[in-house]
Image (cartoon, rainbow, N blue to C red; front, side, top):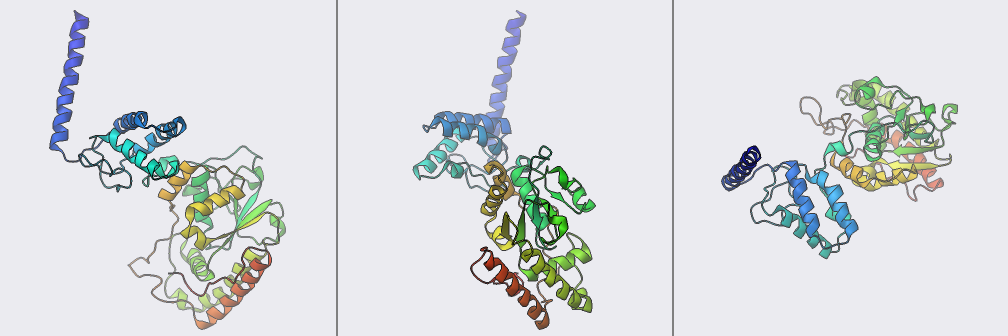
Length: 370
């Protein structure tokens, strides 16, 4: 009798819950779909897809965690609006399995690759948030070399997101450590980080123990501006306009432009060097990081790359505007004399890069990239 009563209560609970759910679906044009329901819907869709088992398993295993995020809206009866929808709404659980299946099948009919079928723009940061050390003495010591202001910190952030391995440094910057770069204080000799940040020249004795280097080359006009901001206002701040009109700025141009050239050309004669052009990284982020991972002999994880692309900026990205709203590129801090100095160093760097086979033309840096 007790068992019968318990069973009746369970069935009554199911009926009442179903009626309530139907009422909510009828009254609410868009409702939030819990992650576990999305996962069930994907599994159902996965069973309907008449494609090879390997692809079905790929969708079932890899896409369920992604689709468990709020990725878009589906209106009743709209079977084609799931993929590519914006992230501002929720998913309505009406014909969801059919929607997923029909969209995936249409992609296959259009001869798209499985990576395109799986493409979801709003990837959870949890997929690539964490990174850790590798086993000690398991990695070669590869320098991530640049003059300050070239984007070294940004490249470290991207590599950690893409690889899951921490990057190191020779500087022990407490601000970067506090900001999440847990490899900042690691001993480079332990060889358990992916790359090691350095601003040293490649000819210095202190760099002789590196087995290779990634050399970052950035437009010197933008580099020197960023370098000056770093010195005067830290990783994310801006120097004042007064500074850029002072003799200090004039002296800085002369010394820092020499450093810009030296930090490039001194590494080029070494073995196992890859040159990374900052502007290429901005315009072709994914492919450039893939090439770096291959240079580092590290496996490519496309799930982490998806996450990296969805979250490409770290906490140390300099804001695009001065405090108070003044755009820092509305005035030109470079005089004609400054340009003469910088252009001479650009020519010398171009000659060295061409000599060692990294480019077949002069660098085209002629001013700030706005």
